[in-house]
Image 1 (cartoon, helix red, strand yellow):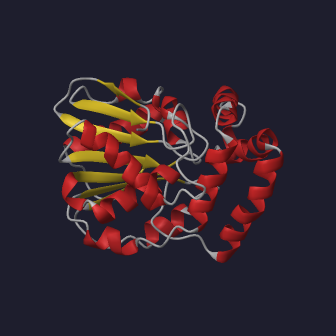
Image 2: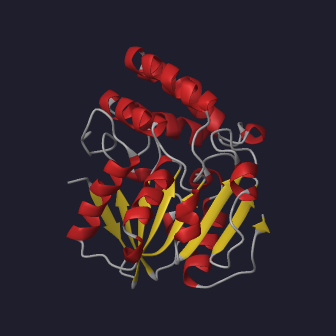
Length: 260
């Protein structure tokens, strides 16, 4: 069973899935701004935080099944699922198999579009570096995930992101990297899902192509998207803004497709 923590006693259950080389603590800046109408369930994905890796290749489908073990244990039905980056890939896999369990899912600086061959090759090359020098892999990659125009302001958050990434197990990082290489396109999941879909994207995101993600969203009334002036880590760069959008969109409704 994956490690998890719950906060709050609201009637709406919100499950939060962190991204690659993160753990459940990444939500700490954002949670104070989230509505008290939520009960928040934070999960350590396999190989991160206090959760053990579960396979040599952790596909998004496999990790979605591990998440479901937690939601089953808690008896959750009709809940909201939000995933950052890799967590969003897992949320999509969950929504594909268990759509009836979800009121909504949120792609939080994530995408439904599969990696192209160039991105897959970058991930493959990363496997060797991860094995030989995880700390170096972290130091080289993490700063690039933040808004390049605000690196001085975000210095403490970049340091925090690195410290969290250092705690990842090599096994978990390798297994998840391999799983992301195999990640399929899930445009059809977006089209088929009948609940609410929320997409938050960053103008300066170097990990996810925000323009491509937003431009290719189906024109459906159940989808809302936001483009924020930040990089890949809205939970650290714009926690209050992100939480306000989540509160409004999952508990109320706003006009479609705002730029903040």
